[in-house]
Length: 309
Image 1 (tube, rainbow, N blue to C red):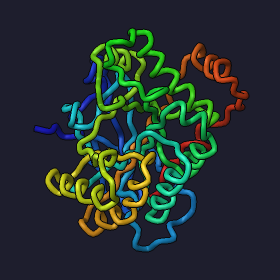
Image 2: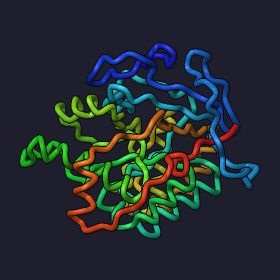
Image 3: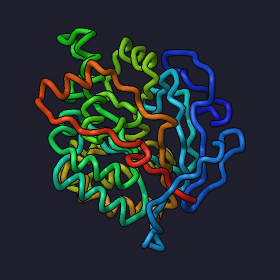
């Protein structure tokens, strides 16, 4: 049985740290949140009004306290359930990527809604300007390792697994000029126990999903739509896994969002209480090893925007 939001505490995955795992603020087309879960006076800030009066929008904003490395997504983590019936979180892996990521951004903007983008570190260094567009649009940015290595691969040492995680965060920080959210998704949703524990010590939240669109297996946009909606209608809510790396996902997204809206589903934005604290060693390695120019840092508030009521 899923546990009610007001009764959950952070750190349930690997460390038993105290404190609530999230707090909530109403957003566009807001739904009243339980009093026990409300954040204190931190309303979001949308960049201008929504031009689409019939947009899917954002139902509410959920702010995550990542202390202890909480896990989200019932495929792997059963303890934390903050979504109400008919609520979804849109997530996109493997970007940034030319054409496809900008197309996804346009569709989300047209519907005045949002998602979490789990960027691959190398891709962030290839296309930092695209990742900056993701941030400028107010989406939450997490990471997906440095090179999309499967961390359960026995050929990797424990240190190499840690490097994949840390270099991913440092690369995204370099691309943005500021630290992303302490949100991480394992490639192929493969979770080595020692890395789950490690992320707990780093206060980084882990994301699985409630339903996988299997868009990486699809050959046509309609397949992405059909698989996602069939699973979602069965579950009634959930964190949806997609990829902004794939063309057919970008092509499917406008119709998928229309179906979500027609089906009465509402989007919840997840954001972090504080940005990730990267490790200087890996920050330096990114600049040195790839011979990247140094990007001056800028305030986190200019990168990750909250959403207004």
